Amino acid sequence: MKLTREEQSMLDGKDGKARQKAMQLLVRYGEALGAERLVATDNVAGVPGSSNAFLQRYYHLHGGGGYDAIFSLFDLDSDEIVEVPKASAHTCHLQGGFDPDNWQLLGASPESFRISQESEAFIAARGVQILKTCAPYLAGNVPKRGDHCAWMESSAVVYCNSVIGARTNTEGRESTSAAMLTGRIPDWGFHRADNRRGTHRIDVDVEIESVMDWGMLGYFCGEVVGERIPVLTGQFTADLIRHKHFGAAAASSGGVEMYHIVGVTPEAPSLEAAFGGLRPVEVVKYGLEEKRRTYDNLNSKASDTDVDYVMLGCPHYSLEQIQGAVALLEGRRVSPNTQLWVFTSRAVKAVADAQGLSRRLRDCGAVLVTDTCSSIAQAVPPGTKVAALDSAKQTHYLPAIMNIQAWFGSTQDCIDAAVTGRWNGVRP
Amino acid sequence: MSVKTFSLTGRKVVGGVAEGEALVTRQTISGWGGINPTLGTITETRHELRGVSFKGKILVFPGAKGSSGWSAMFHMTRLSGASPKAMLFTEMTTKVALGAVVMRIPSMTDFDRNPLELIETGDWVRVDADRGIVDVRKATRPPGS
Image (cartoon, rainbow over all chains, first blue to last red; front, top):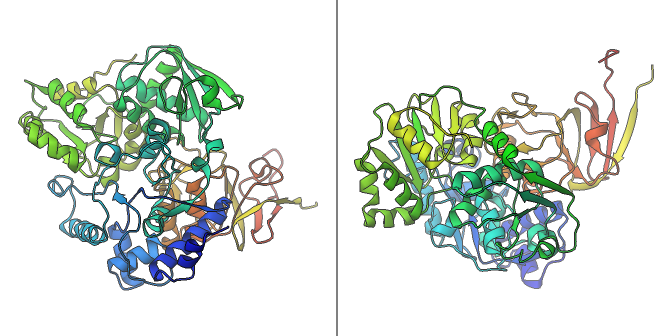
C-alpha cells in the first residue's frame, strides 16, 4: 500500500504506540482487501472498547484485564498493551448491550452492567460520543453527501451510502477503532465512485406504502442481490423511516450496503445514472406473488398465536415512530400475558420524555428502552416463547439468537398483539 | 486406485500455510447472529450448515454476509480456539477481509478456478497463502455417493 508521509509517520510510531498499532492493523487490513491506499475520514461510528463477560474473562487471563488491554489486544489486534489516547477523528459509539435505566428489566447482572458502565466511561474520556444507537443519523450524527466515513452497523451503513450519499464500507469493530485513532480507513469499495453503481434492477409492480411493505421489499432485495447493489424502479416515495426499515432488511437477508431508488436516492436521478453505464446482471420483478412469498418466509418461524412479547424499535425508533406507537395504544392497555418494549436512543428518549410520550407508553403498560435491542442484549421477557416484531431485520435474527418463535407484521399488528395477547397479523 | 489431486492458484489475503479437511458451503455466512463463537458452529436458522462447526477446518465458502459484527465474532473464535484453520472464499468484502486479518489464519481469494465447484467437504486441502497455491486431495468416497 502507498502511504502518505503522515500515515508513514504514524506507522513508524512517531505519533505514539497506539496510533502505530492502529496503523499496522489498517495496513494489514488494506493489504487483505487489495486496497492501494488509505482515505482520510472524520466520521467514525463503531463500538470502541466495548466489553462483555467473555472478553473480560479472556483478557483477565491473558493480559491482566483493564480497558487499555481490551482496546489494545482486541480492538487493535495488537500483541502489546498500549495506552489509548483521545480519538483523532470524530467518533460515536453505536448501540450497546445495556439501558442504564432498565438494565434489570433486561435481565442483566449487576456485574455485567458495571463492566458496561466502566467501558463507557473509558471511551467517553477519550472523546467518543456516547450515542448508543444503531441509528446515529437519528441522534445527531448526519454526514453530508460525499463524506468519507468509517461506520459499523449494517443498517446504518446502507442508510449512509444510499440515502445520504456519504461513503462507507461496512466496517468492523477493529477497523473503526483503528480509524478513531488515525482518521484513516482503506480506500476501497464504496469509497470509490465506480463501485457505487447498480448491479441488479428490481422492477416493483405492487403497492409499497407502509413501513412493513418497505421492510418486506428490502428483505426480498437482499435475498436476490446478496452483496450487490439493487436499483429499484416503480411508483413510490419513501420517508426516512421507510428507508431505515428497507435498508436494515436488505442488509440482513443479504449484505446490501447500498441501493438506488430511481428518482428518490441522491445518486440515482435517472436509471442511467444509477447504473453508470453498467448493464444490470439481472432484472427481477417484485409483484404481489413475491410480496406474499416474502411475508410467508418471514413468518415461517412461528406457529403459536399466543404472543408473550412484542418488540418495536429495530432499527431504533424515531420520535415519529414512538408517537405512532403511542397513538395506536391510546386508550388501551398491554395484556397481562404480554410485554411491550420499544427501543430507541438516549437522544430520542430525552425528547420523548419531554413530550410526555415515555409516560404515556408507561401508562399503557409498555416500556421505552434505550441503547440496545433484544438481539444485541440477548434479552426477552422471562419465559418468552413467541414474539411479535415489526422489523424484518429483527425477525431475521431474534429467533436464532433466542431460540423463540417470531411473527412479523405491521406496527398495528404488533400493538394489537400486545393488547390482546394474540397474533392476528394480516397477510398482504 | 489413483488418488485425485489438483491445485488452484489465487491471491493471498492473509499469509501463512495450513492444511486440513475442507468444510464447503455455497451459502454465505453471518458472523454476529449466525455463529456460536465458542464452538465455531453455524447457528443461522435457514443455513445448510446449521449445527456444523468450522473449528479446525479449511472453510471454503462464498464469503461473509449480515451484521458488521462479523470480524469481532470471528475474532472471538480465535480466542476460543474455535476458528477455522484457513479460509478460501470467492467474494471479497470488508467483513471477511477484516475477519481473516484478526483471526490471523491463511486466507485466499481471486482463484483461477472456482473452489466452490471443485472442493467438497471432506477433501484434504493444503493452503499456502504466501505462494498463492491451494493443493487439494479428493476424499475417497464409496461408489454412488
